[in-house]
Length: 377
Figure 1 (tube, rainbow, N blue to C red):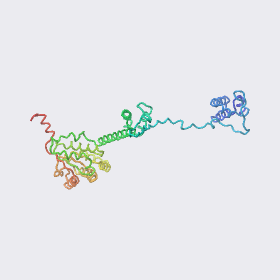
Figure 2: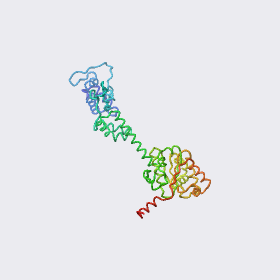
Figure 3: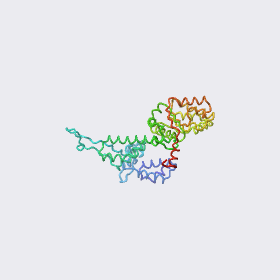
Figure 4: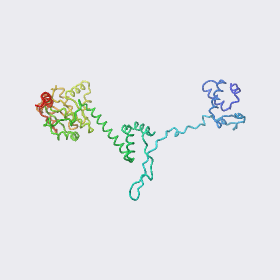
């Protein structure tokens, strides 16, 4: 069988025939035509030096000369065995050139001169490096760098800013962007029913509220000191406005805030208790830096709801701050809880070291309605 294969193709180099026969044996077929095809494939991908190595003893080269022979026991060297792996450095893309600062030379009169020894210029917007910078900012999660790099680079070149000042501007832009996104995230998690800010509260309409006291509550000091806040007043006197505005100001300082009504909180606790998730819900509320509890005392609670609400106050006592807005004075809280001893325990926890703001009894909404219906009176 070997002679039948070799005789028709004896003009081909022996090394190429051997390599082709090895390939055919691996695929399970040793036909003469297939050997010839594989041998020619080997010869087509072979340079001159490899052709001499593939040629066996007595093989004739393409120009009619006889190929050099080795020892009788020399082993045929495969073309694939002598090829070296590609250099991995050739596959790497060209790295962008680093910006080098301009070298300054100080003369005897201490006047800096940047024109005598110029450094490399800053890359202008639209240079190929911009694409690499954009990809790097995406990988490093620097959205402000990516969005404002071209604008800041253009401004820095126009104002001839130093590289240190340019880097500082980029870092400050990223920090400001992260602070803004953190504030927005905390405001979403607070779940305020409507946007209200302390700047929109009309102190002239409600002289019972001292502006300096409210201004002190904008700072997070009282929250970190775990001091409660109680807002007492009739409906329409601005309790909810102050509660939401103070909570918004605290959230913008970087602390976590959660706003809810008393009835919604009790319903959530009762549902969690029925689904055997009460511990996880109480633990979640106990981790919030400031809990804003609105409409406290508007609805009377049953015994189970009062006990569930009492657990929230107990978990947060002297650990996290709580702000309560109610239309009932402390002496009437027993009607809300239906249990004098339980009411006394809750009032004791809320009143200890608390800041008390009384918004009065005159409704701001009623005054606005009167002014719209009877202008000039």
